[in-house]
Image: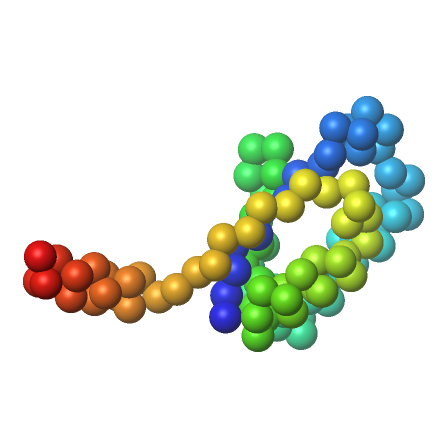
Length: 98
């Protein structure tokens, strides 16, 4: 399964940023996750990071997120992704039943 994950610092993290070494450890974690395929894509948006995570289930994703350094200083929002055309075929079938 793939999940769209948005992360941003908590208000406490903005008020008191983490040590540079801890931030570097978090960055290294994401780099390793990209190499091993746990993360498919990573971007930075306005005030937040955006990732596509690969995980077998929501529970597996939650475990991955908990393993991220500084996770306690992140706000996280998750959306489950499905193939667009799988979705549109479901909508089409629904509309045809109306």
